[in-house]
Length: 407
Image (cartoon, rainbow, N blue to C red; front, side, top):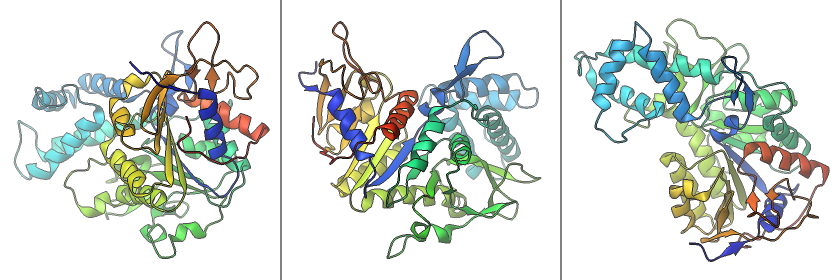
């Protein structure tokens, strides 16, 4: 049991100060928990549902759809039989995609457990199509955390551009930025059929060319691809709303042994995160990210180790006991601060939130829910509350100096 205690109000203020208008470089990593925080009516029931399901519910939806498909049912059954007894026991749809793509690389002109290259390719495409139908939804018109996030970016003036990293394939960030009139660069240039331009993202000395854009332009890096990325039969990478014959959708890199050109968009996006953390004072805020992606974790943790002036505020939904990987890493990285509902790890020290009701604090009930009868709860792990937190900062800006080891 934890014997240390941290003050949730102090940590809320430190985060607010880190995001205040100044010369600090700021980046956000928005994970799958962000769209889950938005609830919309469920047409099939009187209940409400998440705008986009989490990975477990998305996996279950893809599974049921394929099992009910006359065209793909048999091949999907052959694939799942191959996965039985392997680790993990209950693979997510991303892990299933990785397995399919690994088989495609080795099957050649033969078959593996009744699956030939055509069957594997068809399964890959069908899974991507199902995912697109689920995640390719429109952002609700009413003010959502995404709208508040985009408004904050638009109205907070700073010297360096905001950078947004996300493993999500959806277009919610783009929709929010466009609705609030925030220009952004995502590695693609063009109009009708925007093409991926690696040269605009490559590192130079002085740093990358994309920094020559005005600081009000957001840099948006989709590290797992997007539902509107396509690879054409000519091996070109384009961004457009509709596909044409022969195009292959580019969502979720399997990180396995496929050709370098197929990996390039994803690697280039990860390089931006490496570069962000490597240079000078940098603040990375994660929201809706569970630290379940080992490749992203490797980049983040290497950056924090290599640059002690960088700091990561990890806003976690629910209790910290749900995040074993993150807890272990925060125990050895003093500049990784985990802020969960029931406590935190700060400067490698784990502790519960101190019960210290400050009803007059500007962030009371916004970032902290604390009463005399109940334990203090830190609210910002919920993207919905984080949006309110950002909106509150616009109404009451709070400049200050960051103390990365304050508890």
